[in-house]
Length: 258
Image 1 (spheres, rainbow, N blue to C red):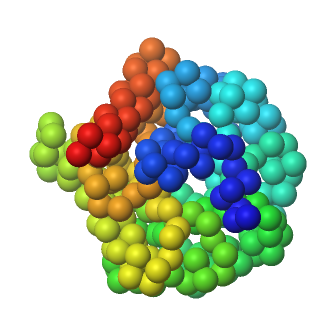
Image 2 (cartoon, rainbow, N blue to C red):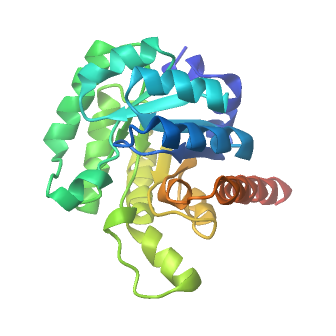
């Protein structure tokens, strides 16, 4: 049995069917009120996974409010064990986007070291690792291969917060997603070439317009953060999650029909 097979059956199926929807509340979002609000809409809207800051109290709150599996994100592996004890199903190194504005960047060696420490601490828990988009694309691909070699179960891409679209509308949404889509293409291609059947989650900067693109270029699922968590109305948040769910399900339906 692989570690992914320890996950809830529906979550496994979404990964296998390449239709996983993860809602991200934010690695540095420790507000119980915000996490509670996001957790509720993620569960009601049809998300498969909720990604929150690594705090045991938030895990308990999120599991109860969302009724879906919870992933905890951090850049300090020592925080993971207590979060897993509190009910987290997946641990994740990253997402790094929130660190870039302050000038904090993560090298490939540092990410690899964090992943090794996480795997040592929790050898049986599903481990996801974000590949920094500030690395050249070939380095992103190589880091993904190195991460898989040490036992990482999921690879995630990023890049939305560092993208600055110059156009509005649909073209602007595509420009916003370009860095994470490029990373997904490079990483998924490298994994396939090396016969690694490891799911890639395309995250950061995506929208209903670009979610189908992420799946078409090799992602097994998508991670949605600011498109949901920056909204102030729960109704708008719920509508966004439902729209993303429908976009993924429609894509799967088209693939089945074809």
